Image (cartoon, rainbow, N blue to C red; front, side, top):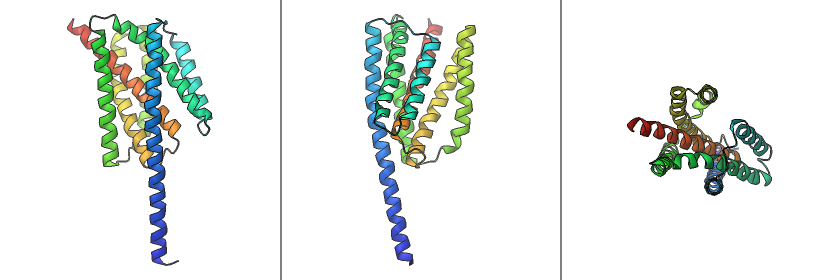
Amino acid sequence: MNYQSVTTQTRDQTRASALVTNKVLRNTYMLLSMTLLFSAVTAGLSMYFNLPYPGMIITLVGYFGLLFLTQALRNSVWGILSVFALTGFMGLTLGPILNSVAHLPNGGQLVMTALGGTGMIFLGLSAYTLTTKKDFSFLAGFLVVGVLVAFLGGIGAAIFHIPALSLAVSAIFVLLMSGMIMFETSNIIHGGETNYIMATVSLYVSLYNLFLSLLQLLMAFAGDRD
């Protein structure tokens, strides 16, 4: 095999890899957009019917159960239905939280500010990662440990009713979810994640937690001003 044929083969492989990456990225953003819209609809229905918050145990069991189901079905068409089941369920759990915030004097403004902040962070970090094409795979270990610690801290704050700890966990989650957005986007463009269903779930969960964390921080700061 001569040098020219090797070069041609390498170029073809690079082009094929780029096409696969672009397809995964396109499918991920498309599915993410649809699941966010579906989640907003279920959250709206939950608010309209004034559904009660299901509680931490039901929320965790439902979330992890649907997450494992989605992972098991990620290579089939049923995986897409599972993603909608997961994001729809998360929307239902979000509705009661938004209802409680809406009863605050400036509740609507807080929700819209948190929503706008989430969108700006996501668009900014995604654009930065896509433009620079930096590899953020080195964040994997730190993010796993950080999310685990923050998750346990959040449970502790809820059980023992420690507002300061809850606030600290929210601030940490904002940073961790921002890192997750860069990590997952980088993972897609560098070929580390080739399944758009799992990429969608990762980005959706990051956005969901980012929104809730920003909302909690805004509520705390608004309360301090009052």
